[in-house]
Image 1 (cartoon, rainbow, N blue to C red):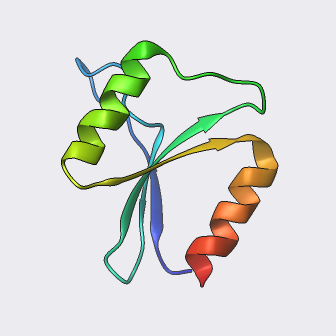
Image 2: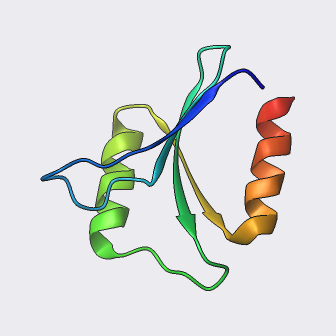
Image 3: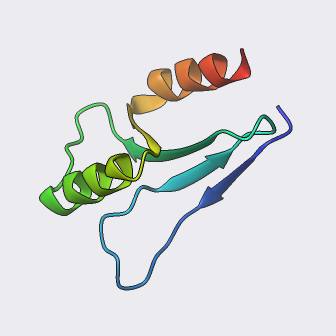
Length: 76
């Protein structure tokens, strides 16, 4: 797709999403990856709300099927 997907680690800021997806059209999407039965921790929920208050797009994807669907969605 011509974009980039970076693993995000942020020392001192626990709970930030796992990945930053940067697309050629200027979209930036923060992505938290979970297993199909995974759950967000309270600190993850806090960080997601914090990013959303900054008008950032955040997605939580559960399992490989949701990752595939996300890739198809952003490819459009």
